[in-house]
Length: 624
Image 1 (cartoon, rainbow, N blue to C red):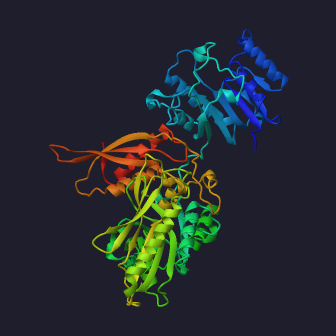
Image 2 (cartoon, rainbow, N blue to C red):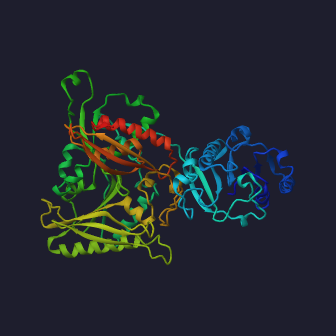
Image 3 (cartoon, rainbow, N blue to C red):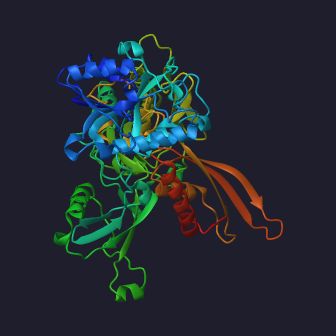
């Protein structure tokens, strides 16, 4: 649908407004404004001519409008513009980059007051001024107008950028260069299109209540997993790319093997159930999120509406969870005080924990491919392709020991063919980019890593990614004559590779624009609605506690939680040992950046300050 109400600010001679008014549908209204008074334009013949053309077309013209105070220029009923245009903004005369950044920041903050919810802000800048990779050549960040960072101050993200074409608006003459009747250098100029970001609200961990048999429990979800529990990406009504890729994978394997799809149980595992992990998977367990279930005697009917919804969701998800009949109390004193008993559980770190239960079942059928899919949660270091929450799919195939080599090779061949086909579906015609799937042997056992050498993120970005594993070490005391192959795959990484999604956090966004990229069942290249987000760098150093071991993974986990996943990189810089006290200090460099929201320097500074407090409390270090 064509925009209905357009606002033009900073018009100099009104040539853009006059030209634009002649190219638009008559139902679209234009309000053209400038900072000058009518008397200031009286001596400009071109301005007088354009104003006359605008009046003849019934276009609204306003003088003395300050683009940094738009709320003062329009009454409440006159706001809600669908587009706001600001071509070649400039403070005038020889204003430096700092002054022009300030102008842009105030302009974007002002736009937030008068722009429709799904409106756009168009800002045309001369070559190099924006400071984004779209500029050719790109200026150094400190010497640019940092347009994306300035827009973030108003809650906007850059959603598109394309060359600015004067030919598209015949008759437009951009003047005002250094407050003179001279044109700006528009060769290589770019039009930047901004849209509203979702508000950057600090999400708080929820207290979730569940009923298991006759017992009621509550637990506080881990802060680092806020917004990642119970999202339902794999459920029936979803058309999330993770579900799409899983269904395509299963459908193709179904052409070669009879399938047995299993319902994924609760992601909570009682402490005793973790013993099902084989020794080769103990490293998975060490990365698990452990939480405490508290016996909860509160009145469920009296819960608030929001908490009641949480409870209903978790009752569905966790209905199969079994716990010790008598959860222990932490101490005699706590029991006397009436505090809740506790049961220690972990969030499932891998679907592999379910393998033994499946292959020990008396009705397990050899030759059938058993399939289990669901979310898993692991503590991990911060890097572009490691994630604390992702979706895993597990394939289990049992067969006679005498047929091991043939059955294993058949499964691997089918899997490679399917993956190779999926990874080439979004390539442009004639493109030489692509991906190749390999099964890399992992000694000393008979396991394999599923690796992908991919160029799906661009020709200059070749990645070797491990997207899954193949294990043949599982054994069953019930089916002693059978061998078992277990294939585990990270669906999030696979979806990123297939659609060319460069940031795993985008898969978890609450912004509806993400899912609009995906038609049910189709695979087409992903186009991000948030381009060139700025990044901010902060260093942190601290003294270690000599009595406690420093856990670097826990440091990364705290940074994830405090920053709400905006820390994208933690780089170790240096280690210093005091010559007299022998106390050790570590220094790290943190890089903050979002993929889907506006993030400001002030917000990052606040997060960095909070991180200093949290590591002191949780990791027992002393910030310097």
